[in-house]
Image (cartoon, rainbow, N blue to C red; front, side, top):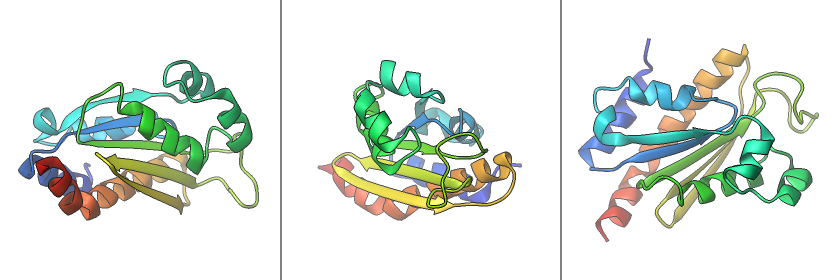
Length: 166
């Protein structure tokens, strides 16, 4: 069942005439899929680039390899870079990137356990970041992250509208 917060976010974007694009790593396309199920998807969702493997972050979105080495593919810094570079690929009013650890085997550490998710959004010139640690199965972590992204967008829509109208 589609999350109410995602439905509310899609509706609010549509009401303000705003579009959204995603660069997805840990959510692997699920973020765009959830937004595509909303009634307003045709006027809101521009698309998504799935870059689950670090090589795609580097080779398609052109994240510098030294950034991936220095910060890891699942980091706030790389997530910000993905959101920034997404702007040159998909024209939209809101650009959101997400990376993180939904299962063991990545760059997890005591400071960055499984469940750590990084979100970065650009609303034209305004930039917003979030780091959350969720628990549960990989799917539960992904769904909690999608809801968090929808909340973040909803919180920022008034700012995005002002930027959109300039």
